[in-house]
Length: 493
Ligand code: AMP
Image (cartoon, rainbow, N blue to C red; front, side):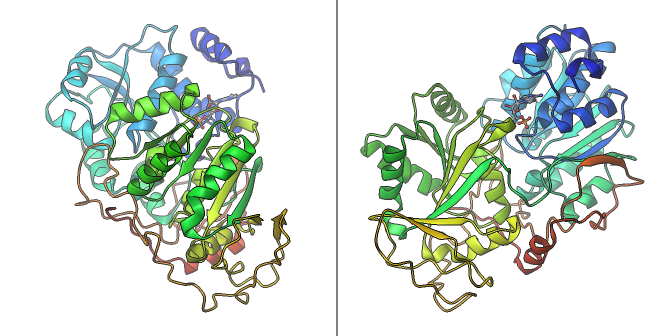
């Protein structure tokens, strides 16, 4: 299929052509016609699938036909969990609408509210917003929803994880009940389905990503290494492999800062982004990374959410995430839109539990490779519960293969709560709100719906039972889910 077959307004088609896109991605092919005709959509799609254009293009098409937004009015509201994602969606909106006489705006916390209020006076055909700041603005009467036609919830799973459910409910209460609803989420946990039930109306369900499976074009491997030598190994890998642009994930804000400093000391240009950095600092770090001025960007999961860099060649997990789904999100940063990429994890013995959870979720073991000179003293136990994982290769060295801990959960989990335990990035709202009220963060038993095949289908309702059929390859991962404990993200040091 070609973009021109979708019948988008010529101004939009022109902007799309200028981006160099000729064929819609699967989510675009399925979502665009539905959104154009005003239908509700519930889509399982991760970042990297082209989902942003999947809702932005048809929204612009629809809105371009109607009456413009007047002062303080909003015609389409896109809610996103983070400021980075908001800024990025807004960029997309701007570039796809450059030939249309429309006005759009973006609002998020962490920056002054007054300029946002001023801009909203002119009205916004599309407003991209994070929930907290949106409510602040609404409460200060800077936004009117009387002409709202469409609501988009982008990365809804993330919003729930970050504890935005109360804000979302408050927002829903002040929107006109008759409206179009589009819900995008990487996963469809029971919580998301409950949210969806009260939100979407006879939606077309679209699923373009087999859940719990990682992008095919991403090559994944892990290097077992002692925790204390991770930073040195990272410097070694960067230099040895000539990684000119790598996104490195750190579980904590503090860890991100420390690592960026260590890299700088080794003369590797690096910057850290996380929730404690000002918006300006984050924007600058990202711009420097994109332009190549900064070679390594160290990010926490939340700050990295929404970073969109075309064809990012290299992702590194400096720590494994506590929430296994974050692994999938992390490595989704590379190998995007058909390009190939590589994701490397530095894994110490105390992270065995996180590793097993991840391997269960993605339903395959990750190839292991010890790096000569960095063989760990504390052996990383073999993949949990799956004996005979002979997938460890060694590069160069003559050291015998690591002694394994004997298959399953064995005794040598030497303290998997070291290395941060459950320290997540606490203050992950777009504003500076504390942990209060943000009690979500547990992804317990998510993805119970396993993987539905590609394709769209009409569903009677956003049914809540999560087992909507076609379960072709998610079984083991689901079994894994049952064993997962609820994870709670709490404030980091
Ligand atoms: P998203 O999933 O919305 O974050 O988009 C992922 C990336 O794919 C972005 O860099 C887009 O610019 C790019 N993209 C979106 N649609 C297309 C398309 N039809 N063809 C090629 N690339 C696309």
